[in-house]
Every structure is written in structure tokens, then in C-alpha cells.
Image (cartoon, rainbow, N blue to C red):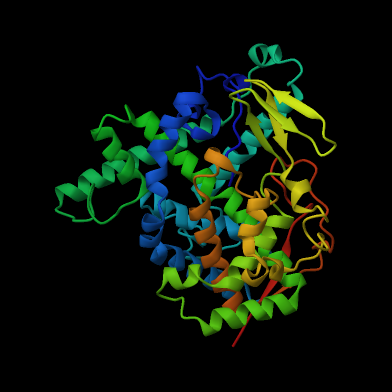
Length: 416
């Protein structure tokens, strides 16, 4: 959920044209332009309009789990299904069939929709590229001799074709007099980007495709990780789970996005999850102007333009000087009467979405998704840990994003 910027020589940009359209991997004026094109597509008002689509995707997840009849589920895969289902509507206005195999017409635990398969390949390859970039940091010339693609070629072709198909469908709908057309009621990300083409802000279809993959990154992998970790921590802590359930049942959130967004304990649970499992364990920044910083021992450090800075989000979030009993899951630490999340942000010790002008542009979208699916699942199911789920918080050593080691296996028992 945070922008992780890597220098442009990490991969061969002459081959990966879609990659250069993403604000995640651009710098300077190009970054400002790409980000300004994308941010208006992720406003809270646009997200609010898609609240029914979020709830519909969550209801499909409930049907899927009900049919599973309390069989243990991989929480990360379940969350990815939900994210794929919703993001298809939010970006392209197409049906993902993430919970239902269209060839069989029913829920299938073995079925992965094409978008989920491509998104998984997309994310997996980008992680490999980032690890390659880190390993070659002391020998950057290796990147020119042995370039590594940031996105697989097959996903480039898939998302470009998906965009073409979506645009053709809009033309057909407009020809048939369908009001949900190019500038009609749809209001998805592609509609927003088409307007920028008309304004000459975006030049071609490749740039549109690049932006759609950026939004997908914001709303797919990191959102699914937050869902999985939040459900895990709630499953381990029955007191917290029941307290959250009581709040959700007492509030009428079925038809009100704003009501859901104002639930204090739901916010506290998500903030505490993000404290323990921030998607990015460290933030990478490039210094743009000379600055002198004072260390805690009163010594000074001067940074110059081009210097790389790594900020350990994980270390700040688990520092006992700032968070009492840092290994414990205690959402109440973010209660308003104790200063709320603002206290920790102003101290500069809570940065799950990054900080400053490069703070994650999709944080509102990701949080909205997570609130909808977590609230619907907790209202409808008692969530417990499966036998294969670890009881500690050991982290996976092979993941660029911060993730629990091993599968998060959870059991969902339907409440009456």
C-alpha cells in the first residue's frame, strides 16, 4: 500500500513500456505527472460509489464460505479472490467470476479466475525483480548486462488485451444506447483515464494499461494481505473478535459506506494489524536536496541529492519505547481517548502507508475494501485458527512484502 520506488535501471525500460507508466517506479517530474493522472481516480467519492460492488463481492465470499461448510480455508487466497472480484468492477467494469467456476456454475475451491492468475504472476515477478535489484545494489552494472523484467511479458499482454476488450464493450454499449457508457454512470478507472486521453494528458492505450495495473497493485495484493492478517489476529483473540462483532451488529452498515468508515473499533483493529504486519517492512527514499539530520547521540549526518535512505517501518512499529507490549495484539492502543492513530503519526512512528508526498495513493481504496470484507465475515462467521496455522508471528523470509511464514489457515463457522 505504500509507494516503493526503484530506480529506472532496475529493468529494461525499452522492453517494459507499461512499467514506465506507473508512479511506483518513476521519479522526478515524470512521477508527479503519472501520480496526478491517477489520484483523481481514487478519491473517496469515487470509492463510495463502488460500495455496492464491494458488498456484492463480500456477499459472494460469504456464499463461497457457506458452501465450504466450515472446511479450513487459506485466508490469503480467500482475500485475493475478493480483491480480484471487486477490482475487476472498479477498474474495468467486468465480471471476474473469482468465486464461481463459470464452466460448472458453482463455487469451486480449485478455480482461479484468469485475472487472479495473472495478478499473482504479476506480483510474484515484481517481487523477484525487487530482490534482484537489492542483490545487485553494489554492482549496478549487472542490471544492464542481465536485465530482469519487472512485469512478466504474459501479464503485459493480458492487461493490454483486457483493456482493449473493455473499451470495445463500451463502444458497443454506446451504439446500443446504453446510458452506462463512456461518460455515463459507470465511473470506473478506465472511464477516468479515457477522459485524460481526450484532454491529451495521456497519449495512448499503453499508458492507460499501465495505470490500470498500478491501481490493481494498490487494491489487490496489499489489501489481501491486510485482510488475511487481520482475520488471523481476530481468530487468535476471541475477545477482540466478539467486541468487533458487537460493534458491527449494532451499526447499520449494509447500505452506508460512511457509517462503516466511522466505526472506531474496526479502525483500531485495522491499525493494530498494520502495526504488527505493515505491508512494507521498510521504506525506500531518494534524497532530492541536501539536509543535515541530528542523531539521538547528538551527532550529525548530512544527506545529499541521490543518497538512498531506508526507513525501517517494522522496527518503529515494534519499538517498546513507543508501543507498550509491542508484540501483543491490542487494538485499544489506538483509541481516541489515548490519542488515536494521529498521536503515533505525528510522532513519526506509524507509517504503514508510507509518509510525505509519496504516501500510497491507494490507501483509501485498500482500507475501504478491507473494512467491507472483514466486517461482513465477522458478522456472519465465527473465525478460528486451523491446525496448520502457526501461533507466533514469524515472518516469511522469501517475501518482499511482510507476510506471516506459512499459510494462514482459518475455519469459518456460520453464525445463526
